[in-house]
Length: 118
Image 1: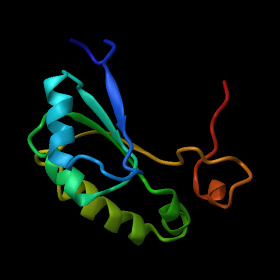
Image 2: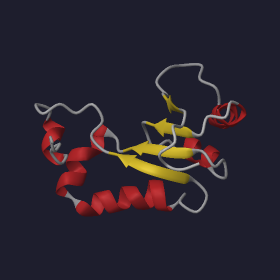
Image 3: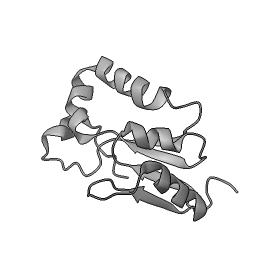
Image 4: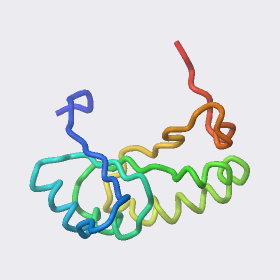
């Protein structure tokens, strides 16, 4: 299968209560053949559960970090070190998503590159 082939992915929303343990969520993805996950936060337990799973991960940079990263490259490097490089040997990172649901009028917008319209 090539990268151009359609794949099923599911967003792993973690806002709520009585959520199942992270390992149970990963096991559910695997049992249902869900090949890709989007994780909106950098929950360390979720990242641990993904180790060795083979699930392709889209990891979001938290909105609360954008302004810091925009003005302080060392903060961005530290985030990458803690949340990506620490897991890169056995978590299948596919993409890092930056600026999810940021509007041009939001304070964080100046920390995200502008969209190019073709």
